[in-house]
Length: 326
Image (cartoon, rainbow, N blue to C red):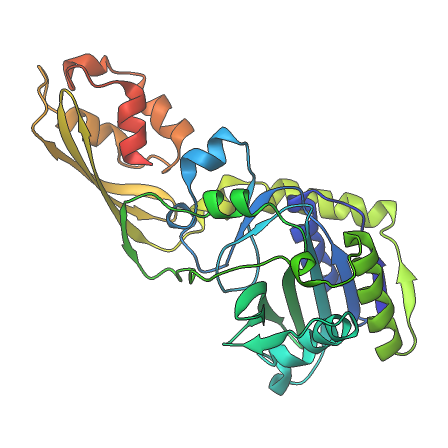
């Protein structure tokens, strides 16, 4: 087994590195890694319905989609992520216990009773500290999970708290659960890096023929190209969301507007705006201008900037319209 020494904290790079290892290495691999603050959404999720868009925007929190299914998670430097990539038979797919048991063993040594619960979670006292997901590629399985050690719970809660809007579609919704940090349950405190070393040492004891591997310059160049072409693109992180409909009603001093959109592959296919607002011009001009536009703030602002919106929405600003559309 290759034990990959990954010190990068860029979420786009780290998610891309998993795909690179999965598709280009032949060995079984294990990697521990950390991300700067970000939200990671599952392969089959509608990104906008999983995040608090305003909070993410105000705090410049990256949002990136992973290869595997499951729900959205928050990463920061107080969270350790672990990845197993193995050549295995079909029966190993969705065998989450096989890959999470080493984590439970390490915690047991620290006097912490952790359990595998539900379909893919690790808990302490019925509070979740680890979510896990898997992805299959040919005869290889990628299993990865989060380990909340000393994460900022305020950021975690705020970033994933979605405001009242109505999304309908075939996307997979995240399940709300109580969460906890591992550090809160240690009778003898240790640092995050000490915990990380304990996990690595334990996994190295389990698997024979271990070899430490560090990404070469060529590896990093290929991974960074994958970042550029996929993991740091709007098309992958937002546009790859399943087809969905979106509705939201906003009330302003000058009147209310109900926003109704149908979006496919991140592109607005139909849009209707209803309400008791006033305007000199027909709002259908605005609706028509947004058909075929990417459902993101930058593209919508570009389309609406061609209009004097005061002619369509008296005393309602561009910012108000954007808040209703996103």
